[in-house]
Image 1: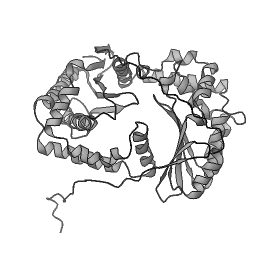
Image 2 (image 1 turned 45 degrees about the vertical axis):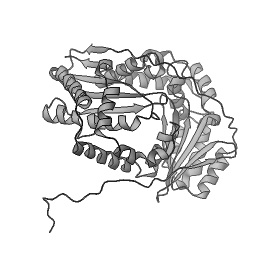
Image 3 (image 1 turned 120 degrees about the horizontal axis):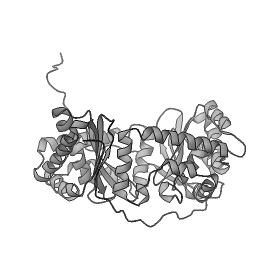
Image 4 (image 1 turned 90 degrees about the vertical axis):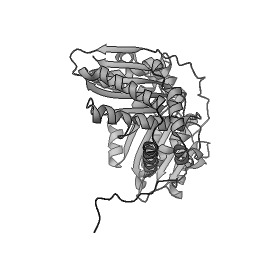
Length: 423
């Protein structure tokens, strides 16, 4: 009989096996990253361009350029493109970001050649039809209008504007930008950035020798003259403000509190990571225990650190009933002060370290997840040593490290604070 009053034994995770990506180069010098994993006859292929919104000369250029890639070529209209994707049982995503944009497809191996040819056509023969651009603008403007009614959306956007200032990371796409965007704004951006000289290909899944050969046949002949797209880092001038955006009709307030952090390759990365996790990074964190479990002010509260190419940023976010707004903020600062002045207990620190080790191991469970983990080091000029040392680095963090890190990086006097709703 199983004694259900006793928890099962567990063994702390010390190390995991990580399948590393193979670095190949096609005949035209186009970089190809290959992750061979999985038994199912499916792969994901991703074309990534260094062409995010920080390269925009006019707001919205990168967004519209990438979203329009699937809306028409010199030979196919949007309906025909979608019909082909559906016929192959594939899925395609055109995504945008601050630093990079890309195309990602998931397809069965038996249709890989057809899907690759289609994507190549989208990249080389995009026509950016005016009527499809007008539809994209209308849909996006409507979505922004809907989102602007959501306190959490407004708080997140305003928070980023304040911590990044005039830097492109602080720029939000607004209705006026989209309304004034023209086809002539898109085509120069497309010619400058969306080509094989500014591209990495990442393939993951059941990749065989014939798969690589197919990629070589389709993408290895196109001219891939590389260009330098790096720009000099621009100053980030945070506006240290505590800002209230009143919404009298709202029953709740959205709160965002935080500041910029060092980039991912910084020596204090793991100290910041563990300190953040203790404060608000998981369900058992101090903020959750205090503000959700004990006070009942919110359903959830989270602290997280996000990394971009030039900078990281820390943010605490939650939604609470208006009458609890100030109380919640007071408790957030109280928990930060505790980390700065009281050494964390051994049991609590070990619990967080075990949780982080387990979560880290879970990030490598599928070929597609492994592709994402590869990107998370490759585009930050790190290598797999970062992952091989991850668990050991997390476990070596001490209570003194946490207290010193909280003092160094979580100075409440330099926090940006945004409230949307009311007090």
